[in-house]
Image 1 (cartoon, rainbow, N blue to C red):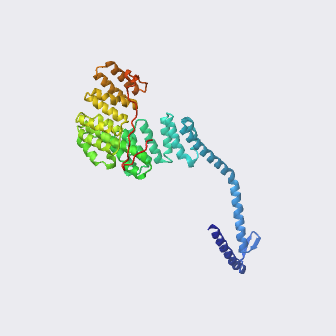
Image 2: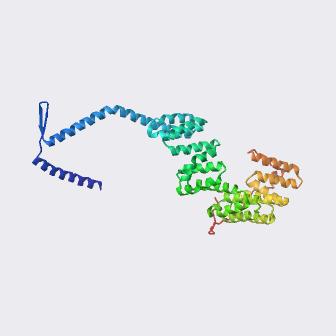
Image 3: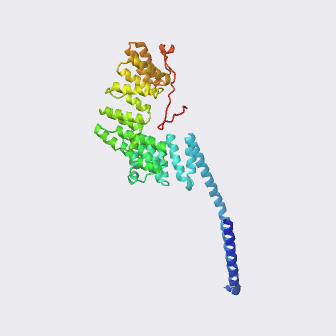
Length: 417
């Protein structure tokens, strides 16, 4: 396609030149120049050609004179870009002092000054030079004010001044002019300053922009919703907030867990129980199972029977086994609690199971074994090795993993990994 355009263009130029030549040949014009006794006579065509040659000669001389200065500028530009690249690599690798030095050198060139100063401020902060980081941000604000403001808010939050960070970003947040990173920082600073409602304002702009990515957005959304739930002051405000939340947010496991804990705190155990049971029917969550076991004493035996029924479909879930064992301990069913707790420890040792097993032995009057279990709970919480019990040495703990057929919502069996 381009070849045909060139051919058509050349034909057009040739035709135009032919007509122009005939037009000029009929009357080439006459130019007379008389200066200080010197007279020059020429045609118009010759005069135009001489003017073009003179213009080309002057342009060539100017370019020749400017070439050394252009070479210096090109070298400066090349060095600045290389120092910017080296500084960014050093920043990622943790060589913060070297990164700050290279980035400040790169900032001498105008085209990369803003990004270089922003990165230099980040390097200074990571190097522990907070005052120098603020001074660098003052310079960066002259080049990239919005990005510098977001980075300044981030540095404030990291140094424990979350409320100041919120105040810094509040004007742009009120006008809806924050960038995606600004909304993220506004949400994080609001959470850190104890203002979950302020963090909630950032969710809708971030959802619309899509710049945060689905996994990161869902994680932030869960944290914000949970914080807002935990900030309620009474049962009425909790019920009102929960009913006003969108359906998707009410199905977040973290939000359900926070709601259940707050509901129990305000004496609404039945509502908390219903939400957890409904959530577990939709999607299994060990965290919700743990919360289910720590609820109040209301209807404890019925909850125990329901939790034991879940073992049929989740026999290898250590959190469920620990929860059932702890519920048995609460109603003094020592002999029934022990197999659940021993199996949980065999599958996935955890401090809660060791503590509950200690309560079992204490209830059976075996203080020595109870003390060992408590010591194991503390050791596991500190990341230390645990001590085997005498009964465990005899091989009486069942460590076999049961194979249970699992099906999806369409009834199709899932393959084991």
